[in-house]
Amino acid sequence: MKLAFSTLGVPGLPLTDVLRLATAHGYHGVELRAHPEEPVHPGIGPAERADVAAEFKAAGVEVLGVAGYARVAAPGDDEPVLDDVRALVDLARDLGAPFVRVFPGGGDEQGPEEADATAARRLGVAAEYAADRGVRVLLETHDSHRTGAAASRVVGPVGHRHVGVLWDVMHTWLGGEQPAVSYAALAPYLGYVQVKDIAGPDDTTPLPLGDGVLPLGECVEVLSREGWDGWLCWEYEARWYEAAAPLPGLLEAGRDHLARLLNESA
Image (cartoon, rainbow, N blue to C red; front, side):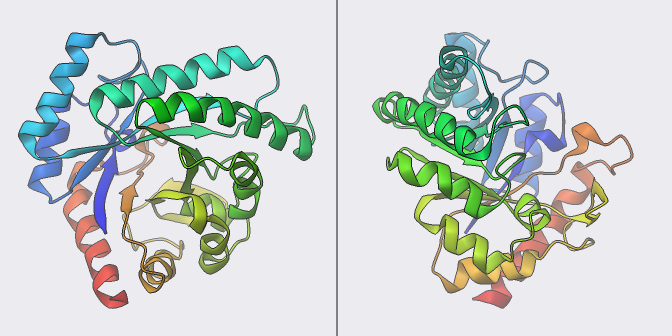
C-alpha cells in the first residue's frame, strides 16, 4: 500500500513546504484540501494548475486526490452542487489526481431514503462528467452517511465505476461498525482509506497514529488479508483543533507506525 497525508494537517502551508515534508518523511502522495484557505483550490487558473502539477512531478510525489466540500445529499437544487463537483473534477484532472472527495451532508431536513436518492442522482450525473476526465468521485463515510452500510446505499445504486467511496476509519468506528463489516460493505466501491487516531468518541482531537483508540491495526489487517493494495492517507485534522500538536513533527513516526502495521499484517 502507498502512504499519503492530507494538507488539512498543515493548513495554509505553501506547496513547496508540503512537498518537502512528503519527500523528507517517505510519503508517496498528498491529498490536497481544496479550499480557498489553501494554495490549491478550484479558483486557481490554468497556469497555476500547471505549475502545481509540475512541482509534484519534479518532487516525485503523487497528487492522491482533491478533497472538496460539495455535499451531494444536501437538500436543495441539484445544479449548484453539481457545479461544485464539476469544478473539483476539473481541478483534479488538471493536477493529474485520480480522485475527488465529496461529503454526503444529508442533514436533518429530509429522511434517509430521500437523502440517499438525492445523493445517488447527483453522483450519477457527476459520474459521466468525471469519466470523460479520467477522475473518480468518492463519497466519504461522513456526517449523514458515516458507516459503510450507509455509504453503500448511495453508491451501489449509482453503479458507475467513476463513483466510489472514501473510507474514513474514524467515522465508521463512531458509527458502530467494526473494520471487517465496513470493508465488506465498501469493498466493491473503495477508492482509498483515510486513517487517523483520536482519544475517544467524546474527544476527537487528533492524536499521533497509534496513541488513540481507533482500530487501525484491524483496518490494515483486513485490507491486507483481502489483498487490497491502494492508498492509506493520514488525515490529521489540525485545522479544527488548536490544541493539536503540529503535524510536521509527527510525520516520520506516523509513517513508521503504518509501516509496522503493514509489516505485521503481511
